[in-house]
Length: 367
Image 1 (tube, rainbow, N blue to C red):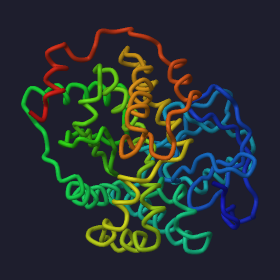
Image 2 (spheres, rainbow, N blue to C red; image 1 turned 180 degrees about the vertical axis):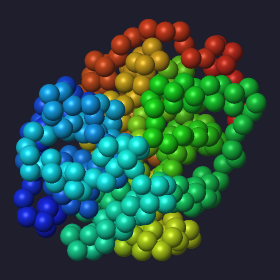
Image 3 (tube, rainbow, N blue to C red; image 1 turned 45 degrees about the vertical axis):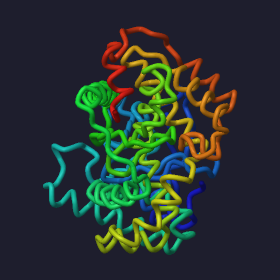
């Protein structure tokens, strides 16, 4: 995605900075475009868009301005030396110094809603909603995201039609896995993982923090580390708000209007659920970022990343990747992707999350 013309500051000038994406220890010379959000651009390509209300200042070495964003990947930061750029950042980012200098809660909400409304209105002016999804998604207020998640949850349940599985011992095992993954990954929002009975080997997430694990995936899994890897991957999509981007792109103007006027039920949800959550694919870049998030999270709990890739390869070979994992839709696991997961695998540095009895109970959660 590329930034849209007309998004720069009042002077039409873009800022200069150095960007670290949080995944690779590499300095990237970038431009900062002051549009509906703080856009980080490299050679014309949009790398990230940080909502102004989420930008915070990090402790600076030698007086350099160093920034992070609350919803950005862990370790992602921007470093700024240029005086003009620093002044523009201070002008655009109302909460730069953090909560101690923030306005009251209602004021922060108004700022967030205002930023979202500006981004949504900008979508009408610059290229349409689908093209602007990457910029709109990061500035959507959490309250809106949760409401959209609740509305789509109802439609997804109708589509799946299977029962919710909650055999007591299996539910306890799943809750244990969920807590360990979330404690290790420091998610911006708490997630809820639920198992649904279905022959399809799949797992996917909804906006606002819901993750569905279909029982068909448990049937295919040969080890708990395979399932844990898939769940860590889906938590990565939640953290990066990839599902919001996909839904906004699919829902287009109808969804935009629903968000602005607070009605995200009924028609708007029907538009986006079938195509964007159950069938459509994330971009290759989004999948790679979710893989990296999963690998880092698994390293934190001392478990291997390679089993995630092994499960995906096995499902691809057995089922051809059709009607299976959302991770595989349109982007089957390539040798390069498998090799990267294997390279990021730090091995079994800690005991398994579940005992043999707990793993057996999780496999039987729908019985």
